[in-house]
Structures are given as structure tokens and as C-alpha cells.
Length: 475
Ligand code: BES
Ligand code: ZN
Ligand code: ZN
Image (cartoon, rainbow, N blue to C red; front, side, top):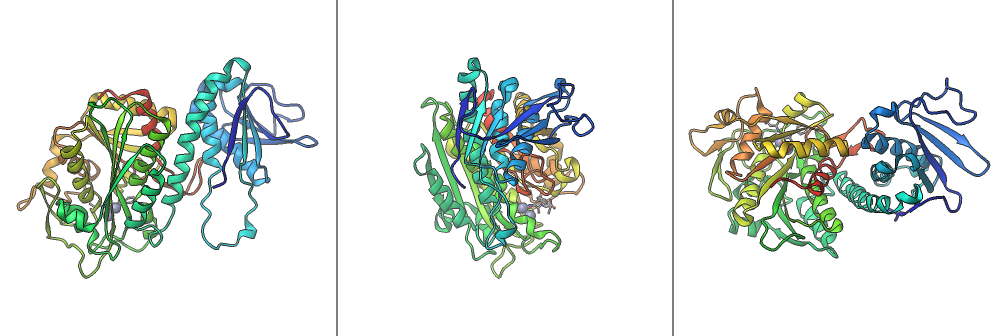
């Protein structure tokens, strides 16, 4: 990705192309008839002056403008200008300085596109954003600069994890993911520890080992620590599923769309991004990121239905379906978080179930928690970032579905309520530690992207969580 230079100013320098924003009912620019432009959200009209192009982007009704309105609108404007070959762009945010952070985020997110490998580049006619000028009034310069600096960190990190996320299974194995985490942590105030198979055996990570056994690409466990808070303060643990490819294993998946299971690692990547961005933002918090990573394959040594495995804290799992693998690697990681760090809360992100996609579609992630006070902060953060969540239940009753005759629990239960049953499965390993499970199966990647995103990995969870952490979680 080329480096982008961003500055916040009161007027442009040079001759950038311009993005301006217009709410419904505001006077239209000269020469634009109302029949051609109704200022609906993300609708655009292109104006050409001698040496400058201006894209006017609609915001819809004034009363309904939210941060995400500007985020998407900026994305729509930037995408159009990039198609026209622009590299130097100014966002006119004079009337909307409050949402400058969101607009810059939208611009940076929209400038990302997965390059691919060896495809016909002649079809591509797309500039790379090199310079972004953010225009606001004199009195808004200082607060806007602060907003824009944070937005740049968050959106750039999001693009980094989207780019790794879009790599296919043959190019991103657990070992390669671990190497990337190590490389990215370099030069940041983060410590990284990687467990290979030998270390996993030594320390009793039976879940990660079981899921990884079917693949010639061995599993890894990645732990990143960030200490920005008081020495004695317990950290918040962030746990993310990183299955680099999920065939289903011996309980193999049907072939249709199985390629999409290259994105079964996005929970883990969201956590990696949270840690990188937390360090860059210098958040005054202690955080630990735990990323169990495996490739779920059928193979001569694969784990099988009926197997009983022992996880990091001694709890056992009766495997009845090897495709319910995410919860098995998460069990080890959550237990490790609890036993090693005594965290004040565990937040866990995973593309865990097809069932949550049936329930919520591709609009919202399921947020499962028994902690009443942790709900509101994430609902608010969802509204601010456009990464929406919906609260789902994890009542004790759901545990009945996974009672086993031969182990602590079994890894599947009845189909009815299976997103909730799966949540109660992973929660078992958190024991009494406040726990929130985000099932991001429906939102981790997209084939119908909103204006600020592209097909492929969305990075969902990263922006949501940083917003909640910056606002302060009641833990
Ligand atoms: N990675 C899948 C869940 C998934 C499915 C994510 C579709 C995104 C889109 C997970 O490992 C899985 O296979 N879950 C099974 C569980 C079942 C066997 C109880 C599922 O949801 O079908
Ligand atoms: Zn699976
Ligand atoms: Zn999976």
C-alpha cells in the first residue's frame, strides 16, 4: 500500500480534486438540476472546472446524519475520484467537522483494494490515494487534527488486516500468520509470543492441537501483550478465532462456496488489528490479544467424531462434528487468558456459526453476553462506527444442549438455537470472568459492500472495539 499524506487545513494547497457533501434541502451547486441529483445518501454528481474535479456526495436528510453517513459518503466520493485517476484529494468538511474522523476513515477504507496476484492489470484504471487534505474552519483545526490522527491509525490498521485476511489458505497458514504478527509488532510497544506444536503439547493446548492435526500446516498460538495502563491493573483479554481454512475436517463441508472459508480467520485478524492500533493510539489500558490458529483439514492424522480431547484448563470436549472447530481452539485460548492473566473481561471474536447468519444476515454481528453493563458500550460503539451489533442471549438453559455423557461438554447440540448454544459453549471456559462473544460469521466479509468497503474482508470488530475501548468499558 502506498503511503498517504494527510493534512488538516482551512484551504487547499496545489490543485486537488474535491469531495463536498450536501444534505437534502440544501441549495444545489450551480448548474446541477434537481432532476439529476436528489442528495440521497451516497448519491453523487461530478462537476468539472478547468483543472479541478468536484464530486458532490449526498447525505440524505439533515436530521438523520450520523458518523456513518459521512464515512460512507466520503467512501463513495473517494472511490469515484480514484476511478478517474485522482491521487490528490481534498474533503470539504467545513460544515461537518464533528464527523471529520469518520469521513477520513471512510476515505482511507475506500482506498483499499485487494491487489490479487498476476491478474490482468490493464483492466484496472484506478489511482492510488497519495494525498488527502481535510478542510475545516480555523476554530476547528485542533480538535479535527486529533480526530483525524486517530482515524488514520484505525483505518490504516483496518486495511492491513483486510489485506492479510484476503490472502487465501495456501498463502496464509497458521505459521505465516504468526510471522506476520511478529513482523507487525516490531517497532511497536507490543510483546509477542508464539507457541508452535511442541510448545502447545508441553502446555496442554489439546484443542488447538486436535483441530490442527489433519493439516500439514501445523497450528500456532499467538499472544500479544500491550501495557499502556497502570502496572497492577488487570488487562482486558481479546481472543480471536483464526482458522486459516475451514474444510470442516472429517465432517467435511459441501463444496459450494467453500472457498469463503479462507475468511474463517477474521476474528483473529480483528484481534491482531486491535492490538496494533491500541499501541499506535497509546491507549491508557492493559490489553492481551490471544489468537489460536489452525487449518481444519481432513487427513490421515485428523481428529475425528467421537474423539475426547482435553483443553488447557483440564475441561474435556466430546467431538461430535469436526466442523464445529472454532469453539475448540477458542476453549484453549479463553482458558489460557483466564488462568494466565486473570483479566477483568474477555472479549472474543469469531466466525463461529452459520446460524448467526440465518438470524441476523449480513447487517449485524451477534453479541452474546450475560454482563448487562457491557451491552450499552458496544451498542453505542456500533452506532458510531457502523459496525452494528445485536444482543443475543446466553442463558444457562442453552448449556443443556451440550451436556455430554463422557466429557465436560460435547461440541454440538441441537440445531434450534445453535448460535446461542455455541456461545454458551465458549463461555464455559471463561468461568466467572465477565465474557462477551461476538459471532461475526455474517459480517467478517462481504459480497455486497457498502460505499466505503470492497468485496472481501471487512475487518469487522476492529473499529467497533477500539471505539468502545477509547470511550471506556465499565470493567
Ligand atoms: N466457520 C464455520 C461457521 C461459518 C459458516 C462462518 C458460514 C461463516 C459462514 C464454523 O466452523 C462451522 O462450520 N460451524 C458449523 C457448526 C455446526 C457443525 C454445529 C455451522 O455453523 O454450520
Ligand atoms: Zn467449521
Ligand atoms: Zn470455522
